[in-house]
Image (cartoon, rainbow, N blue to C red; front, side, top):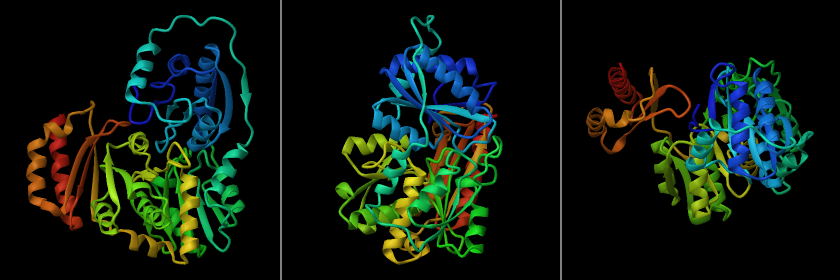
Length: 434
């Protein structure tokens, strides 16, 4: 197996096996170095098996492992940073329960570079037998430092008076999310926080906020917050049930941070998937936009290269670099709710004021084999479509880093033009892949 956009991922027990997880643990220990690791995972049926195997690989190489249990990805990153340890998360994020994955953090809680991933790939298939005694395994209970860290992000302010519905996606934030927001003073309603190993991300969470919107309206809540299976992304819902995606959340937070002097260089980092409306809104607000490839690790690299403070993805990964080394759905939710409380305005008003989203159509085209050169192979078709759209539209064609798909994204002044263009390009992808 090879690393994708965010770690190693595949169907558990057939593509991603326990024996591979052992070898990956050993290779990670050799390449990343250090004598300590923190490991956590989500609620999938296969997570316990893969965690046990991966941890065994680490321990066999002399790495002392602190097992965090079922925790969000940001908790693992936080503990890795706090301890100066390497980290690993057993999770396939927003994918269905049959998939699983292993994503790694370097010592200090940062994502791996492409070069380091390649080193691990080379070693994982050529390992000698381990030597010496295995290192101990230690269980860490409840991660109280992480909760205090998130609550400290709003500097002693509280969320009293806000009614918030939280959708935990039957994933790693189940239980923790409700307790966290209750401790912050909010009146909390929780849904999808009863994992059974198979229901993670199933018609719930950040990838499917329809029921969250209905519950927000039914309870007369001020807003709703949905995380995904490993809780490193956040999608919000306003009091009317309107979805507030990552672009809107970043726009709200960028303007708020800038107004409070916390947006360094008045610059925000986003990926090529950010809506054209986001770019236009930031330009109007006097905020510069730095663009990266898709993937929150590329956002993090850009933030660190310029010592910037805020970046993220439309999908809901938002990185507050002064506070975290990765996207953190719970941290983002607390900060967003605090912005709503301080403004005295509904989230719907803040989202509308922050940006106007141009119609965007995304078509995921299944392919039998990876098409890493999809944009090059369709260069003529893309150029013709871009000429027709002019300056009021945007096209992006790229291969998925986690699934056998080519993603075709089109933005235009109207939904009908965006959809027609996207479907025409999707047909071209199908023709090129057949």
